Image 1 (cartoon, rainbow, N blue to C red):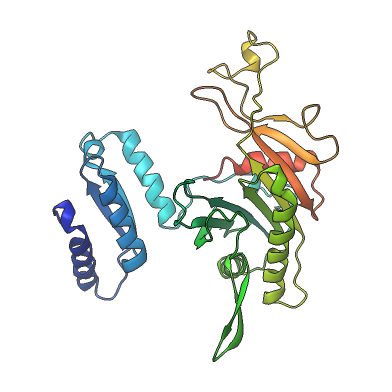
Image 2: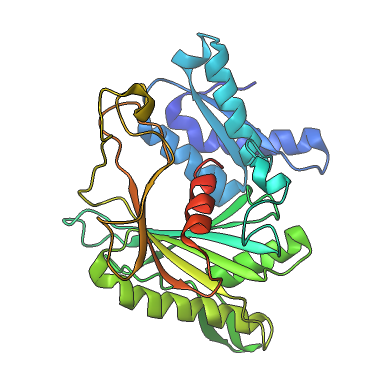
Length: 324
């Protein structure tokens, strides 16, 4: 236990870290629990930056006002966060354990998720931040590793999915986020992925073609850089939340058709009439609406070498929404 004033955060974190290492005699400090004064956002940012970039340490922050209440539900939520940070699993799909997920349970499959966050329009000096996560276990597909990198301002294509550069000693070196995540999947599972499913967020319809060409090419190159003929089949799916489509029950008075909140039931899929006449797309409302009107996500399968049927793609996507 160690207490200090907020302005001393940097020195204190380093002191606590070094003091703990002496006590542990060569073992790693696994987790630092930090109780913060209420609503000090800058302090939270400093603690995360120092722990993650300078000390290489997992931290869990809590607000003093919540800690003093000793509410079981709050403590349970904090425990779930700690468990995930320490490499544990909170949720697991029954279908995954019993190997019933089509086109995932049969052969080692890796599932990626990718997005780019842009700064506000006025902040033209700030970079855009690209983030990619990938499953690190199979057949459960519930543990994910994440990577982030900065790139040019408001650049939508993810620049660091695959990259090469020249090193004076080693010559041409290959790297990038896809390659790193494929390597870590192999280390974690002992197998190389034989199928890739890639969910890409935040793309407008006008950029579909450009993003598919650029990022699918990066996936292919990352695979080929690991082994000459290594080209697992890829399914590339765009996920859109910024659209204006809302779904409502046909008969609003029939309570079997609506959730408690009056919204459509979680798991509702629409893949005809209001979808594209020739492309493979669907609307899925996977969540229960608690407040306001539920907004379904719009999924567009742009490329599919795994030959998913509509039902298989929709079931997999809905299932994935229930893992952490």
